[in-house]
Each structure stands twice: as C-alpha cells, then as structure tokens.
Amino acid sequence: MKTAAKLSFPKLQNEYIKNILRQLVSQHSIVQVFFTGEPSPLFSQLIIHTEKNTSAQELRQSKWVAKVKTQYQINVCFIYSSKLHRQYALGAPFTAFYCRPAAVIYQNEALEEAVFSTGEWKKYKKKLNAYQNNFYHDHELQKWQIKNLMAEGASNSVFTSYARLLEYNIECLEKLYTGNTCNTLSLDERIRNLTACIPEIQKYFVQTNRNQYFLTALFEKAKQAASEGDEIYKDEMYQAVEITEQNLLRLITERFAELKKRIKKESSKKQNLPGQIDNKPKDSILDTAIESILNSVEVEQIYAFHQIIWGEKTTYYLLLIADTVGNEKVRALTHSLKSKLGDQYDFVLLSHSRYWIQKNLYLYQHFFSRTIQNQNLIWSSAPYHPDLHWEVPFEPSHADLYFYYKAAKNVAFQFFAIANNPKQNYQGLDYLFALFFLSFCRTYIFVKTYYLPNYLSAQSLWQLCSYADSNIRKHHYLLEQFPTDVFSYIDKHMILHHRLSKLDKEQVVQMNLIVEKLIFELHHLVIEGKLIYSDKDEEEE
Image (cartoon, rainbow, N blue to C red; front, side, top):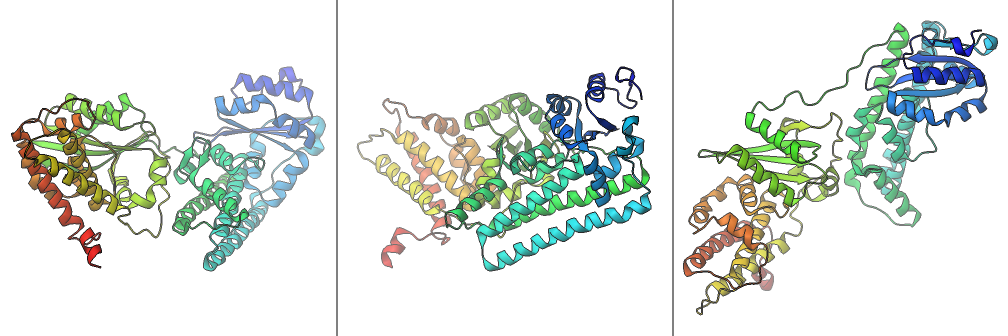
C-alpha cells in the first residue's frame, strides 16, 4: 500500500482536496475513493467509501465538506461498506455509475474484502428496472390516495398528502443526484439544496421569501388547519400543485434514463446548462431600455407585453419582475428612459415581485396570465426562474368594483360642487381633479383588464387606459387642450400642499369638461354595462 504522503489521486486536480484526502486515508479506515468530474450545472462527485458507519457519520460533519461543495462544486458523499453493497444490490443507479471501477482514484489494499466493484451491465439491468418499478409503484399509490381525497372534498388532507408526495419525489431526486437523503431538514431546505445541482427546480416553486416557498407554506397552513379542526378552501390550487409534482416526477424519470444510459456506456455525457434568452429583442430601442433598466435596478425578468404607435410616437409597455422596484423608482426609470431616447419613444413600466404576483393571482390572474408569456419575455437574469402556480379553474371577477366606482363617482360630485360654485371659491379643486383622474384611470383599467395598477404617474395611468381599450383615446383632445401639461399638473397635485389655490376660470372650465366626459364614460361602462347596480336601482328594488 502507498503511504499517504505519496498518494497522487489521478483525475483529481484540486490540491486542497488532495491534501484532505491524504490526511483522511492516514487517519481513518478508508476503503476506496471514487471521483467523477461533471460539467456545470451538475456537481462533480467525490464518494468516500469507509469501512464503518461511525466513520461515515463523523466525516460527514466536517466543515471542509460544505466548503468544497460551495467553492469547487464538488458533492462529497460518505458511505460505509454494508450500505454501499446493499444499495447496489437494490439497483440504485447513483451507486452503479459513480462507484464504478473506472472512477476509483484510491483503494486500500489492506481492506481488500470490503472493496466494492460493479458487475456486468446485463446482470445489473434487472436490479435497476426493479428499483425504478418500486419507486413508480409507491408513487402511483400515493397519487391514487390523493384522487380519492379530492373526490371526498377533503381539502386539508389533499394538501398534506401532496406534501408527502412532493417529499417522496424530493427524496428520490436527492438519492439520484447526491447519493444521500436529508430527512432531518425541512422541505424548504431540501428544495433549496437541490436547486444547486438541479437549477430547473427553481421554475416550479415560487418563493415567499429567501427561506420559504409558496407551496410549502400552503402545505403548512393545511397541516395547521387540520390540527385545529378547521378547513382551508383552496381547491383552485390543486392543479398548480399537480403541475409542480408532475415536473418533479419528470425530472426523476429523466435522471433515471440518463443514469441508465451512462451506466450502460460507462462514460460521461456532457450536459449543457440552458443559457439566458437567445431571442434577445432586435428592437434597438428595447435593447437600450433593457440596458438602462439593468444599470439602475436589480431585475429578475422583463416582459414587453404591448406596444402602441400613435402618430410619430411609439409606446412600449414593460412588466418588471423585481423585488425592490417601487413606484418612485418606476417614475425615475420612466423619466430616465424618456430623457435618453427622446420624445419619439415612451414607456409604461409596471413592477411587482414574483411573490406579490403569486399572492394576488386570485384577483389579477386574468391580466398576468396574458402578460407573462414566453413570447413577451425579453430579458431574464437566469434560465430557471419559477413559473407561477396558476389557479385552475379561474374565473375573472370585478371584486370590490362597487367601492372603486363609488369612490370615483363621489369625488367627481365633490369636484362639480366646488367647480360650479357661483362664488368661484376653488380651494382644493386642483387636488380633487387629480384625485378624480387617479380614481377614474385605476377603475377603468380594472374594469377592462381585471388588474388594478399601483399609484403610477398620471401619464402612465392614462397610457394603461389606452392599453385597456384604445377607444378611450377619443377623450385625449381634452387633455391636450388643458392650459398647461395636464399630466405634470395632476402629478403635482397628487401631493397635498397647504396653500391657497390659484385657479382661473379657464382652467376650471377645462377641468369640469374632463371630469364630465370621463365620469360619463365610467358610468356607461360600469352601470349601463350592468357590472354593478346603481344606487337608484337598489332603491327601486
């Protein structure tokens, strides 16, 4: 047997790990060391075969294990002799491929009886098929139980059963990719750990924060409700959970097929990490806009969901999925883009975090499902951002429309009362005008698109009205006839100032005309469109 100091560990180029291995083989009963280099995103596998379970458990806690995984993208797996032989006998493909003779970089000649070696492919194939069949059999049993629970309307039990099924899938993926299971960790931690070697998993779990996912939080709510004798009613999330489960199952199936092929050929097959979006926009204006946005804020994805050409001006409508881009930042970005690209181009920017969108899908899914489409995606910071868990079935509704409409109508009447005052006391009228415009736009957009925008600039809100229904442009001439730039005027008066109003009759007349036309438009859309009952209808009933 070679002394530890002279060991060279062929195929392993990392000196830091070599030194650690030299120390391990001199201090512990190490039977074999296997190494298989893998291309990104897969982790290379360093499997250390110990004689006893106690040695494997002790070494697994070493600090260098995490360091090697983080800094060098090498997964270190410790496994003791009896478990290694048992896994292979059961047909575990991870063991069969990564512990094959060609992967050995060290072998202890003094522990010859414990040395592990794989057999012929034809003999092993039956074991692998049995291993796969056992997994799918147990998987189908759990799915059958869930279907029965759905039929019984046991919502809590459906979600807790789905949690167990997802955990079953996660455990299988852990075995197939790392050779170990992490049963002591929470489901959130296990999912997060797997994203390092299976980046695609990120696509199937929306995060509520850095430490938890939307679906796992839903499972916890169901578990909590069941323990308290309550019931949660989120049946519309069944399909979203099912889609995630099916995607995990597909990843398992693909990994089985991949390992089976690699075991058979006894050679590595390079896997390519999907890059960022290949179909970058050919529109040079959008290219410049993307560059400017990325230089100012941290964004996950950008969707160009609409474009309007009016005269010589082109308006681009962009949705930014980002965590910390609020209204003020959106205004600053919009102003910056206009300054950089000139008066021929305009931008309407919407910004929401992925979790905010997920949390509010029950209200706005109709809008976001049309906006967040692959054909609209023009930039992404990574290839594996999670897809949203869409609610199915979903019927769009104008929830709370009555309150939005009533608020807009009431402020219009307040405006008329002051504007038509014969004493021409217009104190506060400018703020009422701004408030009405804001209320009108948000209500109009909500009626047309089932989406209630944030408190954006007046111009962005009006442009969203044009996106919602281009017919609203018939009133644009009224805004153009305003004595000053109407949008700047409205934005200015959305913030209260404690001072006397300096309005002249001409401005008030124009304001009055705008409010009259727009409130009539809203009345026609909401009341005559029978979306809600008017106060008069309710009195007659």
